[in-house]
Image: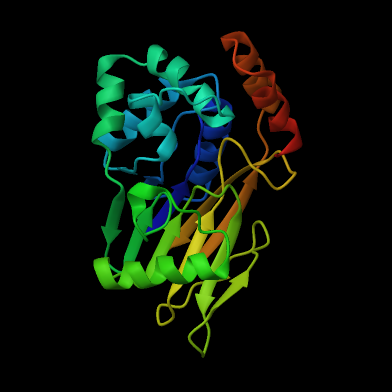
Length: 250
């Protein structure tokens, strides 16, 4: 089965449409949205509607920290990430907010665990951004979910961490479009990047396609109309920085 792994869409409708079209061309059979459907971007209603339709058709959809904030906006928090939460809350109707609130933090499919942040206390939104964090994630996945393999989002970068012949995790940065063999025998953690807000100084949207049959994961970069996405942010009256960063990939 070919699983499309899309995370951190952040209300970027243009990027989501581009990644979905690309995944369909690769023969995707199962959709997995790994959280942060909303936040930062200008089209939360449309993105949540698409996620609801995909979920009705059998997609796996997880909750991210920005989804949780959109359901219950933080009080007295003026950070950039929180600044769109109240606006997003006001854009969504009751059914959309109810959908986000009910989303699970994890999905387990055989030996594969999907989670927005780390499997180490998923509700605390820890980042998997180094070998030590990947170690904790992998250990908790095995201990609490009996999962050898973990796919996460949250960090907005594409990386593979895997256990070598020793106990420590090793880090590998994949090349876009080049399939990576993901050993069924080794324990590994993959971060699939961000559809709607890449942060590696490149504007192209990120997602990954995992082929369970071949055991290979391909990390993709997909061009999209980031100018239209930026225009939607400006039209919504959201902070200019959120619009500017799309072209810069940061």
